[in-house]
Image 1 (cartoon, rainbow, N blue to C red):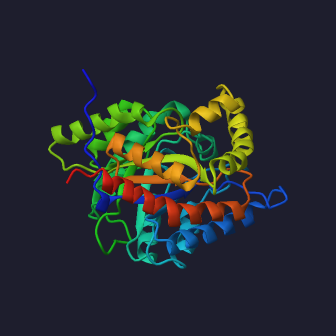
Image 2 (cartoon, one colour):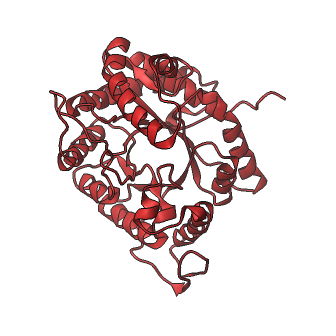
Image 3 (cartoon, rainbow, N blue to C red):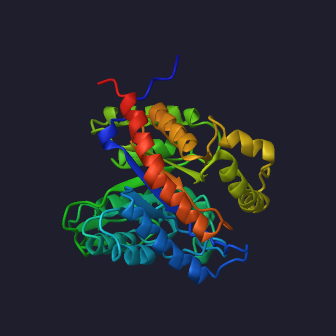
Length: 358
């Protein structure tokens, strides 16, 4: 049976954002900056994104020397004080190794500081360094997330919570503060390719963020279809679907690929050795930056066409570009952000408006 086509995204509902894992960057001479300077630079990058009218700026939690942003919400608080419009949140929060009560409190506080601009993306954690760091057993990987996402869903109701489980002390008619002013914090679950994760996201009535870091976006269409069908089966309203993918933008395709490739090779080569999968080579890189790959690397026109095609294929209404790559200079990241906001975003909206059947 052919795969069910996704409903086309409506241009007025499109959200285009950015996210980073806090990658340590280099200076223009290729010398690594300090972790502290890399973190300070992220604030400046988010301020630029806000000035360009982008929809979202997210920071993914990690606990390594290459990705030292172990407290994203602290950095997001600093960003909130210097921005006015852009929504701020995680990309993702590793809920399995955190306390849902503290996650709720931190993002409710961010929501207050930002005047209602906080969001959160919850995930199990494809990077697992936080589990031993905080004393969690990886054998409990699935149970930890299932239990904690259930508690987080209760906390979002902002009413006294009575809850019990196996992985955390019970709560008895417990109120949790601060309360938000404008209702529940928008919550997403990051999904990397598991049907069980799709069904869980629908069951808790959360939005779904598809993390696509390899291969064609079309292979995720069954997950988008399953999510919509499960929401219908549960009698719940349709929720947004978003896409997270890495990329880099420069004036030309050749320049973007030349700037991105050596750093991509270094970072993914190191990760492949750590996790035991095949390291990238130039042929696989060229395939991923092509029309059917998961790397959005190229000129503004190339990247805009690819984003629009992905959103149409999946019926997604949100796209977050993972714009940083370890070793890229801060100045190049600022140019990347500027091109994304000033040229890619308008082109994507125009392309989707042209395909709107209304």
